[in-house]
Length: 153
Image (cartoon, rainbow, N blue to C red):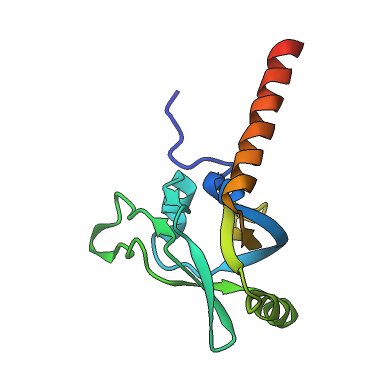
């Protein structure tokens, strides 16, 4: 059997985000894509590590999200790290903008996925940065869970 180029269930997570940030609130948002970007997402060639969101004239944009150029795209291919617009309801945008102005809070992307209808969606998270001792505590909890799983099996 031939290998499928496009996966059916795409869910790409930003694993570093849960270690570096404490998630306070999550939102589901659409994303404005151009050209061959959706094909690259379906191939799973997305990097969310440096992605962050910011407001510009009451609209939410994501910067630093790397979607690799499509291999068969030719000269009509997309730019890998361009700024992309996120689609949220007006009430959600206003609520998110108010909360993001507080000191120490930031807006990041924790996951990108393809929904049932075939549309690309992102999970936008309002987050607070963890201190060093919080990160150590997270590592201790993770190690304890791993040890418990070893003992049970």
